[in-house]
Image (cartoon, rainbow, N blue to C red; front, side, top):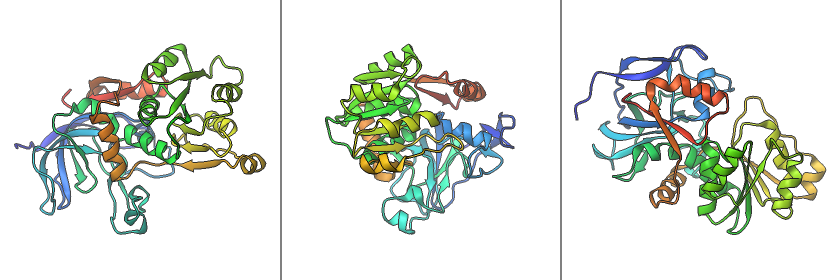
Length: 348
């Protein structure tokens, strides 16, 4: 395939600085890497944090963000096996890991101390050509709609992993806090596909309709509900067996510790800067509550999450805009005005 010397990308040189839509060189893949012609990339809340630089982990600078890139393999390093030019591939948050530490050897590669992160410590998918470690790149079935699958590569994998972390059984209740957002809208669908009963929590009548259309059995509107904790416990007859917190509200996370069922599991996923969750020791012990953090999925989780999508069980509600419009998407994200997921077309 003909590979150009330069490409369009959105890049920033300082955290919080101008988001520049400009021509930059096409990267050359290392011996272990694929070069992927990114067709579409989902836009994640993490991308906003990377640009602002408000997390404890420093980004590389200058930086091309993005970690939900779906495209076509156009070149590869000399050590790559099992891939061929023309394959569909995905750029995930975990771009590479050491593959030899205790975490990599026990299926916890996202926890590797030497992990390289797309759109954070490694230039990501807000460009037309991106590199990814061949071991960690996502395998996408041929014929897949690359725009629709792009959000699965982070949002889908992340919520699927979180639902597995909640350790639920079919027929049990799970609360999805932030049910109408980019992650929440997928979490509701994965939960339903896995056989769970879903109560969605979010703010606004439009979000209630949206969450229910995706499979939520019940919905609690925190804007109009005086006592969210009681409302959730009433709906679920004593509290949900699991909670997946994908909102970026510290208060919502705190409430989940209160309304979760005895012996239930609260899973923390959303990452509001500087947030803390306080677990009262007496109630936590007496209720035997589990509070667990869930990061992104491993390679097996990724393949499973993609398979749910490929079988038609997950529909990602997306809005496609040009890559050049990324600054406007960030503005909408900051204002909390996004339903579902924005996807950028790298050709525009």
